[in-house]
Image 1 (cartoon, rainbow, N blue to C red):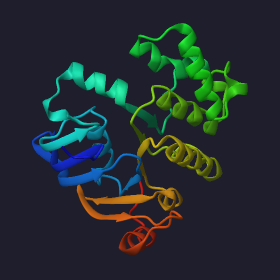
Image 2 (image 1 turned 180 degrees about the vertical axis):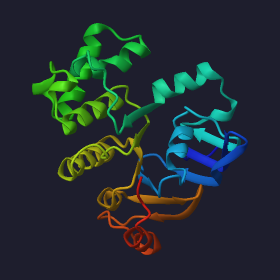
Image 3 (image 1 turned 45 degrees about the horizontal axis):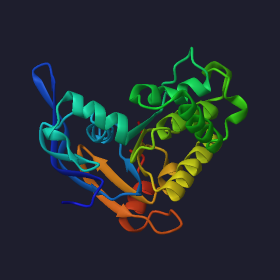
Length: 252
């Protein structure tokens, strides 16, 4: 059995568009080990969001195999896929996707209510710890409309972490916040990655965010055009660094 926490083998994903077929992902193979901090980058239409959706079990491949946290998702029914998402995966969205009528505590607690099996006291202890980790204890009773963009994204990170997932998927996590706040959000994600060994896989078009990744998978037209490991200080090495710094295409 593979030791990878995420593995895509010769994955193809096609979408019908009227009488046409959109080839979103074309024979992609990716292997991600536990504890990686990996960016998936590429221009609009390159397939990076599709790949996140496949890993996140919100979509299925046309062909090829997708393995997530030891489960071959091709073989799972809807109920098993839902359980995998709920217990093994955390999601961070560029638009935050917080529930407006709930405060910070309640938003973070929500996935635990979906999971069930935990007492009110246990939930409160877990939520308080996670909220403290992301620096929002003073705002625990505030609703999303009372928070800044950076604070909202910290709530989203806390919500993703509260179930102790093996993998966190983040779709453009800095897209709707300023660059300084975005830097602090990525630093928080890296800190969690270092301390808890949670695997982070995130899409981005932000050059500064890419430079903080420890690995960059570069996509174009649904294929991997570069998969380059990072050195210890987070700087892109070799051909990947040159491609990322030299292209204007890496935009959404």
